[in-house]
Image 1 (spheres, rainbow, N blue to C red):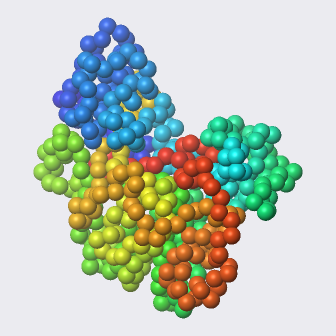
Image 2: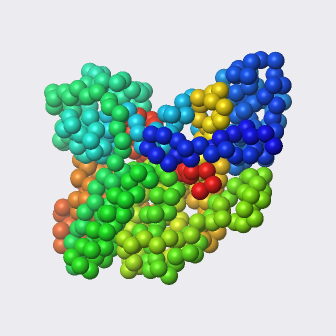
Image 3: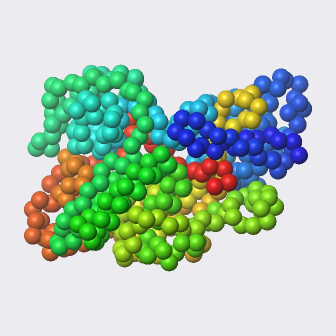
Length: 473
């Protein structure tokens, strides 16, 4: 059978190692009178790739009924099943290189995540409250920090009509504000920042809080990147060895984590799960592909090796925890939700915050082996279920928290600070007595109305909700 597709296996930060894959169907690229590099030929390629690997391939229209002559970037989205309702996730980039960089956390950004709040009762003006600043970013170099308020951009008031686009320029002038007596007031301080290309460090904060006689490990993790797997292991080694006996409780802050590599999600699961040695070699999760691709994978190996992921030994596994607290928001998605689903059969998973995004499906990257086109496709190609075959969070409501809490108390306290709203709530559950004795510090005094309940990035690329694998992983 003619080889039509390459599946990119993204193994390094800035390069992709590509594997050939036998297509299930054969499509004749010369059937069009147009040149082989025309939009029509590109769209036939896209259709063939989607028919082979798309999770909902059986719901696709026939090739003859599609608008074969339109631009490939537009054509791709016409093939999606229930686009923006059922399939909220598949995407395409005109540059496979850009796509690869995005998947590996390399982006040109200011380096901030923020919440957008109404600045006044008219609900017309908006203020940005910085949720976090990326390590090594231009924003960090400029002195911005969590809890700062951005009031104006390039001299313009932020409003409900421009808040989603006002940070698009490469160089920006940001005016900061103070908040007092329910009023935002410009400080007169303006910071000029130019976006830079940055490798995201996903480990935003790790610390141990001694609370009510317990040692509580806290980790803010914002993207699952394989290039930081060893750094993640190092954090858990410190947790495991803290004061010889290790931590007694773990608070995992995933409220800003939109996903990433499944293998890194599986690693985090193995680092947390109780009594890992007894589980090594048993099922952690399973992948479900479309019927045609499932048949191909089974024929290639005469086994189920591409469908099951088993627990692997990790020396930094905490080992003794009976429960884990996970802080969530609608920005908690994909590979983050996979960690929750992985752990639920084996230990108590206590969710604190808001409902998660609701994405139990993932993808791998598809590019053209003959390099006629530079685009990269990232269609949904599989669904995940846990060891109990459970996967009931793939809706817009995601996982429902055990303790509902909104991240709308301003100004934001530093991450890892016991008085920070989300961590403070988890600590109050861990030791109510200790919490009550310090209750004044945690009393919410200012609750602002959010424009959107999803934390935003200064680049929309940072807001993607992803879960992906290297092909045949």
